[in-house]
Length: 481
Image (cartoon, rainbow, N blue to C red; front, side):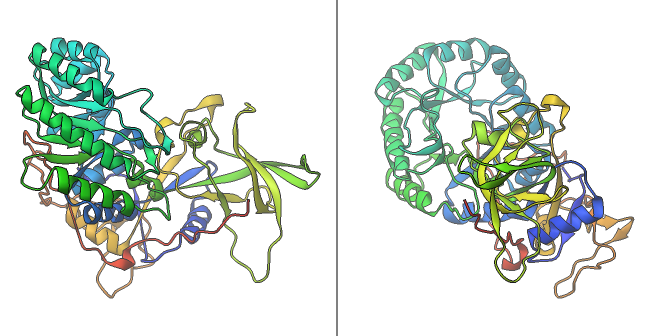
């Protein structure tokens, strides 16, 4: 399961703006593009394993289904939360064993249930009687998780209005599952994407504990608790507060040794901060805004029908930065709005921001663009979906090749050897294709490339101690709004 796309090796502690400027000078791109820092995904995995060591992550593919992201996470040993037969087929096609997948869509099309059965994906969620009847017909041996509703008071995207049975109504559903002869093995919930109400996790876990006892009374072997998603992933956020609530709750209600596996469905946590979008100003208009101020309208080559669909669908607020080098003294900023390339007036990326006066051809950087961006991007008006270029620091590469089993990368058939205390060969380091090792390290892999053939959702995910110098600096600027 090697990575075939070019990966740029960069020195430790590289600056994202410098890397972007270097790429633009070298490649002279004409379309918007992403820079993906694969080392950031490794760092997030380490953060997760440290913060919640008992909770096994099942990455929410819907958040960002980039193949290189899936390959890296698969190599790290995560599971995968899939919402459709297409996502299941994609993950399995990249070498992930079906036992590492949960079909976590409570309202499934019949054809997708049949596909899950054909692909041997056995774990799936339900929240109503009609769904149980469909599963009885099309996948009667499935292992089922009862999805309950427990909404965060504040979340970026609420989900409870669409999915989840009320806790008071859940015992009746368990009774129906028992009458149908189906196999309920646990409880799942999702407090809302981008949760800003950590105590909600305790309420949800306590409700799940009660329903476990109800399930046991019906004779079900309840052994999986799925705490869903909701974990923040942008720069400057962390999961410490949520982790404290989760850890104390599961230690109290589902202590180690109780036979219950705890899993979660993080999405934006893993990928939000790993992707940086670069867009070029291709047109501009100068005028006066409603307040009578001199202002500008900047038109860029990606918009809300493309990568910035997150503004509409994920309630994201994006902040542009220039790629200009810092200069001494204050730089005057002027109010401006930023617009996408299509002919639709809805295609507005930023209604009002303050930026230095920009020129045609300049580039703007948007950080935190890995979650719910590419996955929903389209080609309205014929504009292409922005492509992704991948980068990784030297130390991150050494860690990743140990996990995924790569040899040294090559550039123009010249090997790039990275040794502790020795810098990169600057003439050789570039956009390199890593070469899979002759004898790949088996990290939960079988010899045919599949991962972890077990009946459990158990997965051996890496908890590594990584060098602190391996991560790319973001050079975050505080925008003037």
